[in-house]
Every structure is written in structure tokens, then in C-alpha cells.
Image 1 (cartoon, rainbow, N blue to C red):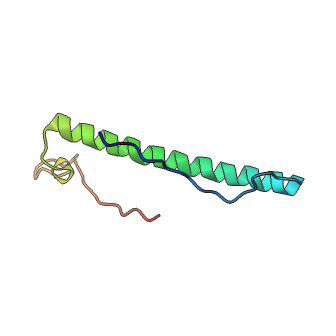
Image 2 (cartoon, helix red, strand yellow; image 1 turned 90 degrees about the vertical axis):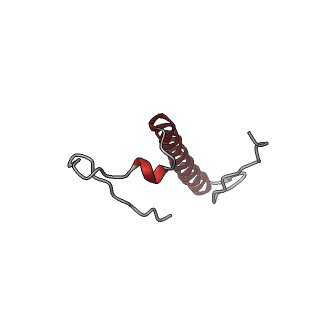
Amino acid sequence: MRTPEECTLNYCGYENPKSKEEIEFEILGLLNLIKTAEARISQLKQSSYLAEYAINKQVSSIDKAFEVKKNDSDNKSFKKEKNY
């Protein structure tokens, strides 16, 4: 395993909010940051699942794990683009 890097998530807010509006804006910024972190965690969990699946099925690549067998009507594969 490599040496971990220092990672940060940035958000728009106030370091020391002084008014009710600044506090509310800071809370909204932090809530947005939490959602961003949750999305990243979800992506990592999905990647971990796919890696474990590929290892357990002993496939040579993730693409091979999703190949559809000719007579398998229950197994439908599709590609979905992710836009962030």
C-alpha cells in the first residue's frame, strides 16, 4: 500500500460566522460538503464491491464480469455514463 496523501474537501462558507444569515449559510455549506463526502464514500464502496466480485469470480477484468451469456435472458448488462 502506498503512503496516504492529505486530501481535503472544500466548501463555500465562513470560518467565523457572525450573523444569523452567515450561520445559516455555513450550515448549508457544511450540509453540501457532507453530501459530497457521502457520494465519494458510495463510489468507493461500489469500487470495492466490484473488485471483490471480480476476485471471487476470477475474471481477468471488470468488463469480463459484466459480459452477457447468449442464453441468459435474466442477465442484462448496460452501460451508464456518470456525469459529475
